[in-house]
Length: 253
Image 1: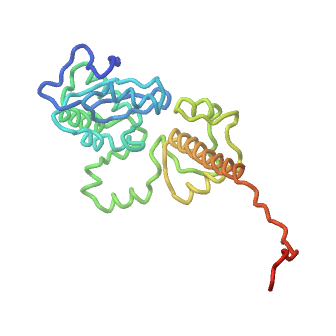
Image 2 (image 1 turned 135 degrees about the horizontal axis):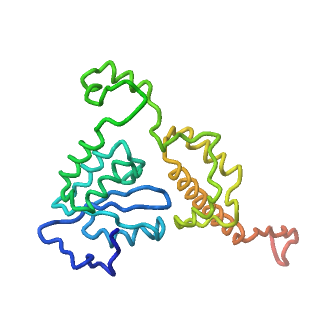
Image 3 (image 1 turned 180 degrees about the horizontal axis):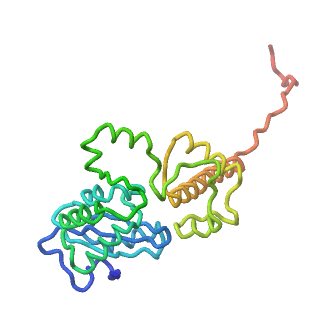
């Protein structure tokens, strides 16, 4: 596993001579997700990410490149994407990381070729249907049928009335840099408001994403409520003077 050098130096006296940067793989063990991105110094980028996602993050693999080509790897791993540059640590991604670390994969093009060969290979299954993605593309009617029967990919699900944060929700939120205060850290009203909003949006996310989104929404809503409460306490009470009905001496109407 790659370690993080001090400051902005590259590890082991490495140099970018002849290259413009790295496509990096950063793992978050708390969520089991892998971030695939591009940076001239992934270890400096790691320090930034640790402030938001926790100190357990680590750079597990890097590939030198002459262009910002992480998007092509994103496309190859699209079926494993959770959101943005974060991907489920599938067996395919694990295999790619091991191959990169072993020096078997050294370029972005080789990564895409490896994914095409590894992830498209037939796997053992109880389903006797041997149709492949290529077969679906050559058969539009079957492709439309497959779309009609689509269900959220493994590891993702839509927000429902049955979803509740995990048992250690408050502690996990703290690892993401979100302080929710005392356990349980939220009320049934807050949870229901969160559900109502996202059910209308029709989003499908990874469970960890729902947890992070909920924790962030709680922090934001409470910060606003705190500001409003302070504003109300500081607002001085309006005093209404008693009308003066007496006519001043010397006044002439």
